[in-house]
Amino acid sequence: MSDLSVTEIQALEPTILGPTWQRDTRGQFMLPARNRTLGWHIAGWAHEYLRASDGSGWVFTQEQFRFLLWWYAFDDNGVFIYRRGVFQRLKGHGKDPLLAVICLVEMCGPSRVLMDGFAPAVDPDGFAIGKPHMDAWVQVAAVSRDQTRNTMSLMPSLMSNHFITTYRVKPGIERIRANGGRQVLEAVTSSPRSLEGNRATFIVLNETHHWVQGNKGHEMYNVIWGNASKMDGRYLAITNAFQPGEDSIAERQRAAYEKILEGRAIDSGFLYDSIEAHPSTPLTPESLRIVLPKIRGDSVWLNIETIVAAVLDTVVSPARARRMFLNQIVAEEDAVVGPGDWDILKDEDAVLRPDEAIVLGFDGSKSDDATALVAIRIEDRMAFLLCLEEKPEGPRGEGWEVNKAKVDSAVREAFNTYNVKAFYADVSYWESHIDTWAEDYRETLAIKASEKNAVAWDMRQAQKKVTYAHERLLQAILDGHLKHNGDARLKRHVMNARRRENVYGVSFSKESPESPKKVDAYAALMIAHEALTDYRTKGKKEKVRTNRGYFF
Image (cartoon, rainbow, N blue to C red; front, side, top):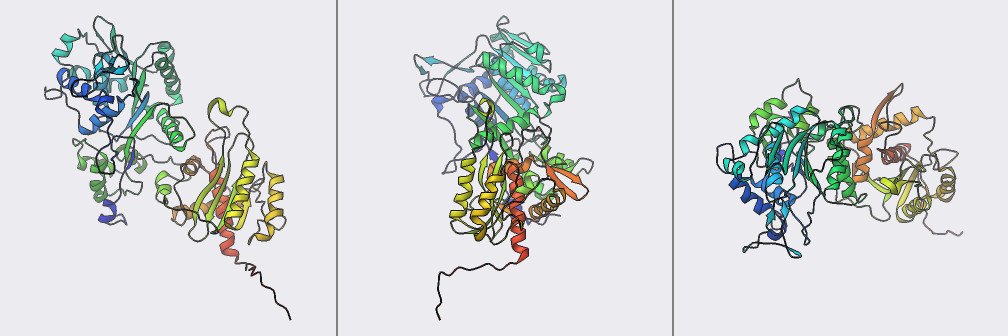
């Protein structure tokens, strides 16, 4: 049984990414202007030419329609706002039928903006008008034939006689042609060399949580990216929640999206849409019956009791159940901390104010790894990432080295702004700076890192010390004693940390020595927490300066 009450479970709101479920201040769904999206025209076309399972005209659910409006939104010049996208939902949501309809739209429907001179054309009611791409080449891509069949097998039931006759369609199992073969819809699998050079105008990336290095998923994605760029094409991925650590294309796309949110990458038109259960959701029948209706969206055909029974099947791991049915990204087994354990510690309203008592932790590098400075407020153990310098992505990172002057300035600003009780810093690459910091601030620190140096907390050749410090930090996280302000950069480093057992216990490291997934902010957090532990346990009395003189 969960420790949460029914009222507390009802208050667990899902995490919403993307525009589909976003509302404005009045509680209304946020939608693009009717004259700046093809979604309305496409919905009417689909109802006329495509059919539902009961033989009637196709009708999008409200959730699907809102996503459609945003996917086909364009600017004043008729250029689509989004060039690539991800539609992530729980298992059974209906991702394949939605994308099958979009594929048929891209092959024959009004999938391109009709221009009236230099402006997008609109009908008398002000709705944007679309036109077909006369040389459309649509692909359903996956790393196995079975995955492409999930989408391609839906095509015959969707195509009405009116559609087949009007567009002179020649159906096939893996390839559908229209208008004398000028427009093509085909299934493709993981043979990157055979895909090289294809002039695709739209590609569906099916089940990208399965696209990994071992099945050529990475290579296939790179080819698709290149092909889409040649023809100004677009691609849309559908996926369940991925398993962290597998380095799937789904994981890479999520990482790319989070870089955009953090401001570390430019948004070149990326639509990421997901609705995920709250990290604190317990796996109990009572909580699932409350939470599942919130995250299934408009997929009312999903049977809640069937999902409850599946989740409670002890043969399947809880982590897999959360990924499949709660759409939660759950950490792999060797991750130090899972997203759920970390997110419940978040207080986004937390602010570090001047003169508050803090401890500092520092982990530095020179050119490849990151350099981080973390503060923990002593009063409530609230962690803040004060400084993070890391190698930029792509060509900008060539020859990059950390700006040591900027980092030094951040350290000095922290001492000038806050009441720093302890400052522990790893020594590697920063010996001279650490000696200077120790000299400058030794007299102001209540706790010293060592007898020889007030700041130096050397992690080199100190496996036992680091392991014990890490276990103390991990216990504080799991017990809920440590908190943080929700900094996405700090979370990324925490999520990258991997468990490493040794003769002393459980320590941590990067995924691999050459991994680009950095953990330096996590290391700085651990060092800061160790400084906090020493400050709380050593019980040294601080000298209080009153600025008063006594004369006898």
